[in-house]
Length: 297
Image (cartoon, rainbow, N blue to C red; front, side, top):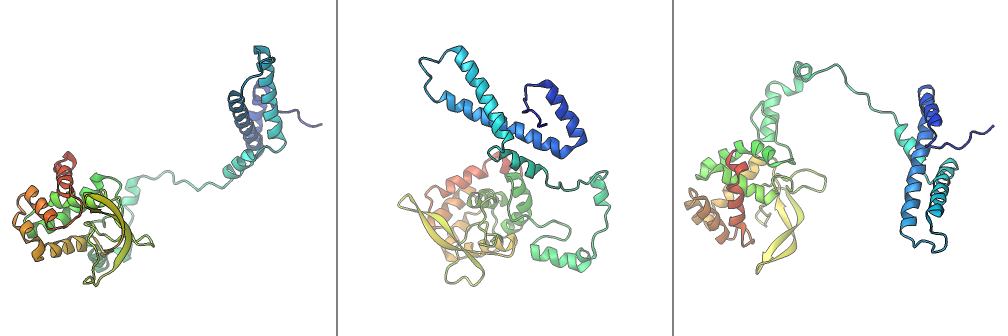
């Protein structure tokens, strides 16, 4: 004898479903998925009814009551007869094997794990040198999640570079933050590798290193114009800072270097020398520089 259609308003059948879940989890999952699909179809029918004009002759409360009962039973009938595919999708998704979870371990357990031989001694030093970091310090990420992570990871390199030209390292970080959207928009190669280009320095004919081509916005007569351009790519962030310093040592930016001790004059001198086409470039960097997040770093 075939089971009668399931009614989600029947509390006895709900109790039967709970019992079935303990006895046959897969069968209970299929039945529950059908009920979810029935509820979804009922919601669709209800929304459809609300968007259509009512019947002027048969539009009373009693008619609407029986119409709602019909819609509920129709939704259940559709679900029992195969439905519209939602129940099947739910069963397929929830029937997949779940990954095993690690239990009974704490962070301290992993800290006590021995370091692999491949990351000890001279190999660790070589890896740190390639990443542009000191041994024992993790390499900065290729993408940053927030300003705090950006500042914390790059401040050591910013200090190292700033000391060579007499500028505040936080000013360099503010400029890099503007250029890269706090590290979230650092230019990447097509294969996902980071260019590590913190200052969006372009790759002209004289550049012999790696490069990456992307779309960029430039200002012409105060109007932003989209343009395809090539930018320099580096092995790490230290190379990016070093190349920025090399660029500043050209005669073009001599005036900016003479004003290195004054953030406002330094940035406006950079802008006048044509470092960027944005007419508000210096003011935008100064606004970031004076923010509490940078000042407190």
